[in-house]
Length: 579
Image 1 (spheres, rainbow, N blue to C red):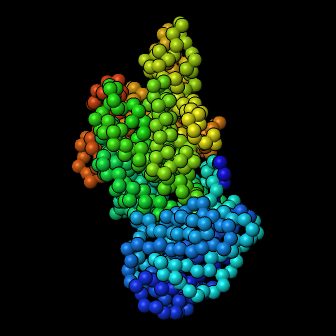
Image 2 (image 1 turned 90 degrees about the vertical axis):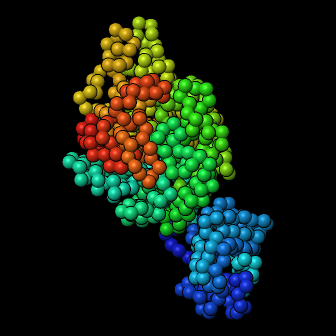
Image 3 (image 1 turned 180 degrees about the vertical axis):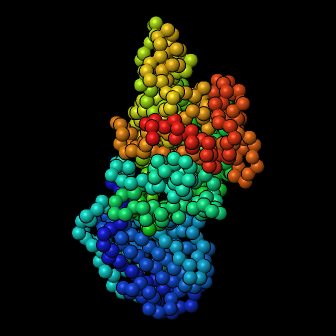
């Protein structure tokens, strides 16, 4: 892996004028001077600004302003005198043929009203002299005039060059504390013990990107992150979660988009997120995205002739929109230099069986090569997101046996090859590399609710009277069944967020904000697309996905994502390490 982009410590700008827009009256081209204002009226203005330059490359931002009649699409063209080659663009489709470069609008920023502007940027390579372009066309019309631009700095930057990423974004960095979650946690009795912990920002509906009534939108969170950042590095954690036909095996977190609404997902959800994250204002932040939890594994485990299959998952496998959506998200977000994509990889109690392990890795590779994505768009994977699997079971291992009977044959382990999240995450990382992902990928583990402390936590191994007694009496994870996932009774806060805690692990994170419900215990009318899943009903006796056991859910739970005070209090009470 490489290093992260940062803003240059010094700005030397190259501002060039553009002149007449197609269809506008011919006149004197406006010149953009050092102050950045047009000296004469013009139909359009283009500002070309080299933000950072090093010995082999540079980063540039471009702003086009329409001073003439409104247009519904635009393209900006220029040519280089040297060997500059664009390698990566954002907020525009930037292509190059020889020295000629074309930047055309994206689907979401093509309309420019009179006085309206669009910003885009790109990284490029060069050798020798990075001569600046001296003329532009806008929508095919040449723009003449302009001051001689100031050369950009050519001394090596003292900070890592733009367009690069660090190997582990969490290393040496603070992580953003969501003030909205923090306030709710602090308002709970005893909540100030954890209210300063960083948690994920869930982008689970189109509306929350811009912000809903009383709730911060994505830009507001990023602006607050810049305030928290200070002079050091800052990580912002986002959960990107609104696939068409979302969560095909569950109802509590069904999404707003129907199974066929892939275009709406792209243009109204992913594109606006990418546009915000591409803003140069946020280039100094390390933005970690958890991409579409609980999606791709469903295509492996809950389809076809399996007892766990659902018609909804069969539909999403057949239409390919999970794969297309994840691929598109990886491609669009992976093009932004300071974004780190972590693809959701389920948890050991879902993927750890032999018939799920390899096929899941193959499915992730398929999605990572769809819709223009490549494995290079995946910085790592995250396991146990919003789940309860214990980080480390110390009282038994997968290699133990009792009276000649393997632990794998116990009712709890049930032939799984992994007994906890750490061993699974490390092994699955190796498998992912073997199918073509970068050897430098790192793993995240969500430890927000997998502590399983309190009085029910075993203090040592179970008796060796039988393999079931040995495992049952020794396991930390006290769920009724490993397939239970909704508002689990007895759960506790797990390891506090920390960077590089174990080999191959980039960080332990609290991606699921503790105290936010997994789903409602009873049907609650809502406009968020969320239904009643009986797995959130404590009286439910189960289905094949949890071995037809009781759900283990807490009663009186609100809609998923809504504050659940009783759960938060239980998580604090059963925290391990204890608060």
